[in-house]
Amino acid sequence: MSKDLNTFLKGFKITDIECKPGQELNLHYNSETFKYFSNGKHVHHIKYLPQLCKNENDQSGDGKLLNTFLNKDRGLARLSNYVYKKFKPENIEESISLLPSPELKDNSSNDPKIKLPISGKVTKLSTIPEVVNSEANINVKQLRLITKLSQKMNNVQMEMDKKHLRDGNYVFKYRYGKLLSEINKGSFGEIKIFGKKIEDSSDIMNSKYTYCSEGKIFYAVKEFKPKKTDISMETYKTNIISEFIIGNSFFDKCPNILNVFNLMQLPDSKFIQVMELCPCGDLYNYIQLYNKRHHRIHALEADCFLKQVLNAVGFMHIHGIAHCDIKLENILLYPQGLLKLCDFGSSSVFQTAWESGIHKQKDKLGTQPYLAPEEHKDEPYDPQLSDCWSCGVVYMTMVLGHYMWMKASLKDDMSYEKFEYEMKNSKRFHIFEGLSHYYPMRELFRKRVLYKIFNPDPNERITVIQLLNTPWINSIDCCQE
Ligand SMILES: [Zn+2]
Image 1 (tube, rainbow, N blue to C red):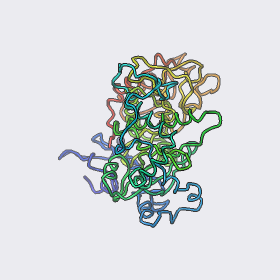
Image 2: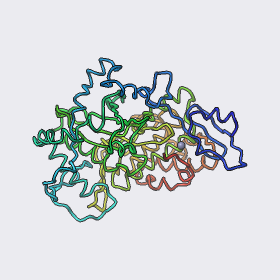
Image 3: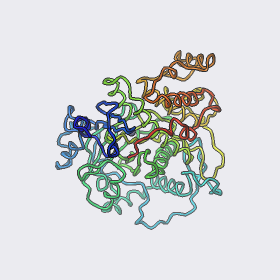
Image 4: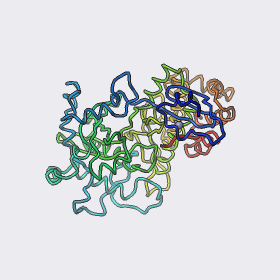
């Protein structure tokens, strides 16, 4: 490798891009965060969250700032009063896991009273029918966990459990450490970053599933928003359990799905979810930053990202769950380009282990520019197909640097109206026709697939599983770790 190339690659993971002996390696594309080589390989170098860096101008951070916090007495010395008061870290640190303790004798019935999922949410059902779909993530094991979680949530027993468990590993601070910082997620609320030194066997085990740096392990903590007045307490708790069960059922199952560790209850009856921390933030912020410097993301980089998103969504679909809120903000990043799909708060169980068919979704779920046209109509729709449309929106937003339309509805959005008009009259859309790609063949394959994703008729649309087998997606060499 030439010296110049080595200079370019400072800070990059280069093991994957080295050539066979005698082969010359040239850099075909070079930006601060993405490089592409003549041998077809590429590398990413995505910036760390500012919270993980020494200062604003140095985003090559690797958790050093947090490490500094961790070495302080309470780890809060440098946090502003604002952050300190608002988050009351003591409360979170005292929260208790709602997961059943393996050390406690399980006296609950092995045949819990459970109800079939209603409107895609996971709840209880009265008898357990015969398993007809063994691939489904929502099975007897999940339903037993749901029952135990709701019993624990509703039970005054919790205080007793608290005493019993206080010395154990079930109180937040012993398992996940101290509050270090926050990530503002806009409408979503805030995510808090917690961390601790890797000390015991449970830290070592967890270190495979979240961000670690210099002997420290880090977690992202989501605090569930307080109950809205228009829903009952039971619905509120069902929604929290449903989100956790869906996220947790994919734990360590797919490299592109965020690991959800725990559901915990605070002393003041609020609930939190403990998750994997991705150190580079979300794809929305990445695109925004990228836009400022390079105008639009390189097609090869977008290809790599899309294939990882499709891997995650396809995996969920095979296991009976649709994400229902796929957007740039729900796709998190690691420095070397590994993506993780997160936030299962809108996710819908369309098929459990006891169902051979799927149930359709009635509610409009997700975020406006990503919604498929059928979601604006008052008819039930297949959430797998609307997920596929949203993946298409994610891709197009990456390569264009902006949304194609704000709402896929003829009467509300002129840009969308133009799209449907062009498709009806010429079966072509000028934006798809105008897109170029580094590889001419892939450009052609991609164009064909885009028309299949953005088919306004969901019955004619390609599925995510079919998409993964198209020549375009098959030809993408994507980063997994
Ligand atoms: Zn990649």
